[in-house]
Amino acid sequence: MGTQWFTGGVVATPRGRIRFDFTFNGIRYRPSINRPPSEANLRRARERLDTIKQQIRAGTFSFEEEFPDYRFLRRLGGTSTTRLCGDVFDAYLAHCAARYRRNDMAAATVRSYRKILDGIWRPRLGPLVFSQIRYSTLIAIADDYPWSKKTYNNTISVLKRAFDFGYRDRPFYDNPALNLRCIRLRKGDRPKLNPFSIQDAETLIAAIHCDWGPAQGHYDEFRFFTGLRPSEQIALILTDLDLAHGIISVNKARVFGVDRDKTKTSEDRRVQLCPRALSVLRRHLSLRAELQAAGQIDHDHVFFRETGAPFRNLQHSQ
Image (cartoon, rainbow, N blue to C red; front, side, top):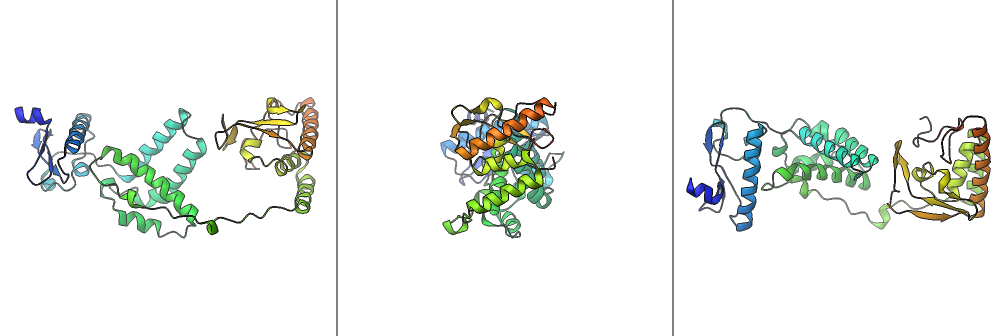
């Protein structure tokens, strides 16, 4: 007991391994891991042992997951909880949702992570034991899809984040997702810009006004001559306008129906309107005043649909 107290239940073995000493289901176990017993590794092992004991008390400890190479694993009695990949994905997405509630992550980011994990990785990995996943399994799934370079990088990046989250409980084990590499995007991989000519822009603007009406026409015409992101434009409110000086303040966005108090780049800016943009804005505000007088507008958003309702998202049918 004196030795265990002095070492904190962790000792270095003669063969360059670190051995743990703890009781699980009334039985004493002394599994070891292949880790050089340096002072730093021993310190981290003691911290890990504290976590193991907390998990045992909480009934969430998985011997198979923590020590998959234990030679007497088949003789274990009792039950333990083994985490599946689906469990890790659920925990990671719950963590992302908590970060969103703390205004530390955008709703669009959480939505994107969920779409990638649920649509790509969960069907192939969800039922598998998290600790038994190998790099070869991950790369085989990734290589099975005909993704573009950008889509490949986005999909790999989200998986790496989820696995990094899961392996924070397993500091002594190698995370197979760490070996996944994103593809380098070269200059030639990026789409070439092909801007509208002014003649094409005028033709398109006229068609939108004709087919969709003045509210939608003003919205798109304003975009052409300001370059605002759609998420920024639909979030504009009346107090963002300075018509006397021809300036608008861009300091928020609306993404998937969720208002954010910052832009995509998290940088507020003031945009000086060109004469055409200012003319469009004045025409649009006149239309807004007419609809407001008719009782069709009861909000302070600058742009709106033909019905007078504000844009909740960028889907025209919503």
